[in-house]
Length: 159
Image 1 (cartoon, rainbow, N blue to C red):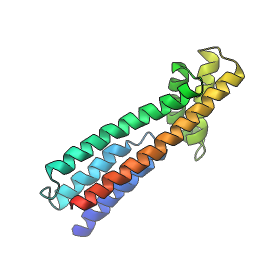
Image 2 (cartoon, rainbow, N blue to C red):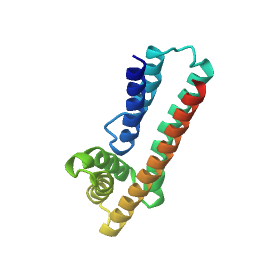
Image 3 (cartoon, helix red, strand yellow):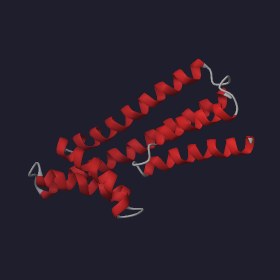
């Protein structure tokens, strides 16, 4: 039974990292799910209040990092709110329409299309906003990966 518990914990952690590339997968929920699976199979006693407090703080940081990095990337490159929404929609749809590269092409095209249609920007300005969305997405993904690694390290320190 112990092996099954560890397989499920590790599977949850792996799925949480898949969520970095496929945003439709709620990565942070799988990460927390891994902690809960450990508690159910083994013991919650090892997961003290400081563990849960620090993990909750990191979950908040994950959400803030995700939002700020994307917004910063688009705004820094001259994009608008429409570009941010287009980028988000492209991020959700892209991987399903164009497997593998859709995760990069989706936010870019979403921002470009939104800037062209909603904001009536020139093609050059729209492309610049698209590049900003791509930079923001990549920065966000790296930041979230680092935070998730830190959360897992804290978990292993706690147990």
